[in-house]
Length: 157
Length: 258
Image 1: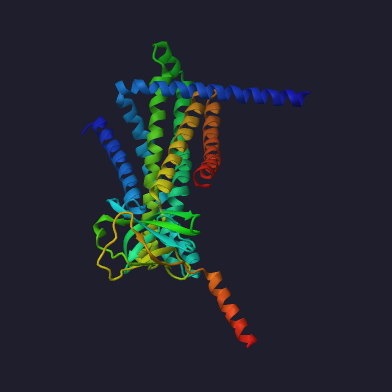
Image 2 (image 1 turned 90 degrees about the vertical axis):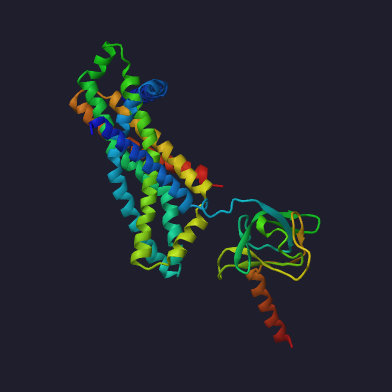
């Protein structure tokens, strides 16, 4: 093999290795490889308090991820937070309408996510339907506050 | 009076250098067109600028990742947070250490070599010789080196980050027994492709441009004596390193600041 061919080979290997490294960064290290990229349908849920829930937080049923939070905004009409859930298309017409949506925390101080408890209705969620029954996030200060006021009330008696 | 005239001379000199450097940059960008006709020029420079730098980048990346794994483990395990080790190693590599350390090593390994080569060409009047033959050395000699640096640095930075993650995984998962699934899941959950990986690549492209530009300009603009070439080589490493560190702060503030 002459010298020119050898240089070409090395440069080819260099560029290929560099691009492969970029590919690994994209697929293995970042969230691009795990993100669900297929179609999804959107469902709304209204919460009194969303705590620290963020866009892109997981939506789970029985602990299995079925979608992501795609949007969060405040509805000034009824003073509640509206959370838009993007759920994978394969679960369309599979989740009952009386499903219960809760904001849960992974671990004691972990990220917040939405857990869905399926109900028993014969009708199912589809694009733009709304989940009626929700439970707000547990805000630590409120729990502690309730505990302290509870103790205070006990002392009065 | 002498103080002020010295200061004035220094400012005027700095402005002239900046002007010459900008003109050189424009000339090299115009020279990219010529390379479409002669891709072999670029190929040879990719070899000497990129391929020959792989070894130092690979070794440095591996060991930086391994040290991050060790140090991160000792601190995180105090809080019972070993599972965040993957995220910590990957985030610091992809966002900061990969682009910055690659650029610093590139300036030391390839930048200094570029300056010395071009400076020596000038000192031995090879560049004048090309001009005598009506060949523009800015197109023929400088532009391929510039483009090669521009292409090489992002690729090298990506290799650095991947090998660093591999090193961190080897130490954390292999030697210290961090849970494999938690290591990779924490990493994939925490690293965003757009915000982290793409921004890291943009950083390394900017660093590649600055490092190669400084190296080529210092060589092309040096005093054509042996002392001049040696000073230019030193200036290349010092100026490139300072420019990379300063720019890194500006870019980080722009990209990751809200």
